[in-house]
Length: 214
Ligand code: AP5
Image 1 (cartoon, rainbow, N blue to C red):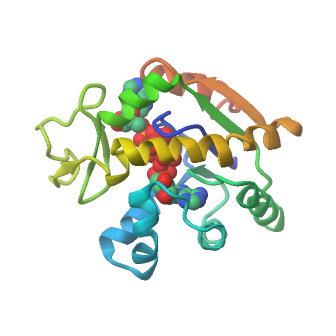
Image 2 (tube, rainbow, N blue to C red):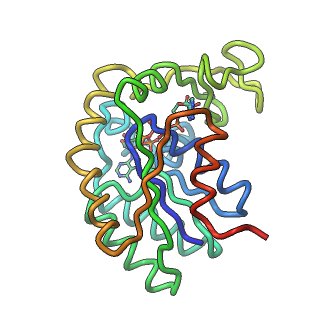
Image 3 (cartoon, rainbow, N blue to C red):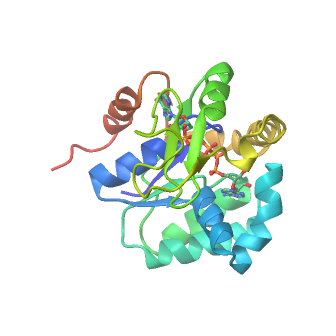
C-alpha cells in the first residue's frame, strides 16, 4: 500500500506513521525528520533547510519534490508518507512519480484535531537531539526526564515548536495544505480520522481503513 498522512501540526502524523510502518511493514518517509537529520549532520540539504525550519516556513517545492522522488524511487513498494505533500504542486508531483512506478496512491488519511489540542500536544513535545525520537512530557514521557530511552541523547523542544513559529506553521497549513483534502476527496482517496484519544485508539481508527493484514 502507498499511503499519505495529512493533518495539521501536532495532529499525530509522525506518531501514527511510525506505528503504521512498523505494524504493516511500510517504509516511513517523514520529510520533516529527513530535513532535521540532514541539519544535525550538517549536510548541504540541512544547511539549506535550517532557516525555513526555524521560521516555520515551507522548504521550496523544487527541493522537496526532488528529495521525495529520490526517496520513493529507492524505496520498495509500500511507503507511508508523513509531511509530504504540503502543496498542490507536491501532490501532483507525487501522483506523477507513483504513476511512473506503477504504484498509485491507495489512501490519503487526514487526521483531525481541535486547535486547543494541537497546541497542547505541540507545547509538550520533546525530541531527541541524537536520534530524533519523539516524546511528550505528559502523554509519552521518557523513562528518565530529558533523556532519550532509545539512545540516551538529550531531549529538547523543537526550534519550530516555539509559539511564533507554531502560529506561522498553522497559518501555512490552512493556506497551502488544507486545500489538498479536496484534491484527494475528488477521486475518493481521502479518509478523515478523528485524532482525539490516545495513540492506540487513533491507530485503531486508521488501521480499520486498511485491508485486513495477514
Ligand atoms: P514536520 O516535521 O513534518 O512537522 P509538521 O507537519 O509541522 O508536523 P508535526 O511534526 O508538528 O506534528 P505531527 O502531526 O507529526 O505530530 P506528532 O506525531 O509529532 O515538518 C517540519 C518542517 O519541515 C516544516 O515546518 C517545514 O519547514 C519542513 N517541511 C517538512 N516537509 C515539508 C514539505 N513537504 N514541504 C516543505 N517543507 C517541509 O505528535 C505531536 C505530539 O503529540 C508528540 O509529542 C506526540 O508524542 C504527541 N501525541 C501524538 N499522538 C498523540 C495522542 N493520540 N495522544 C496524546 N499525545 C499524542
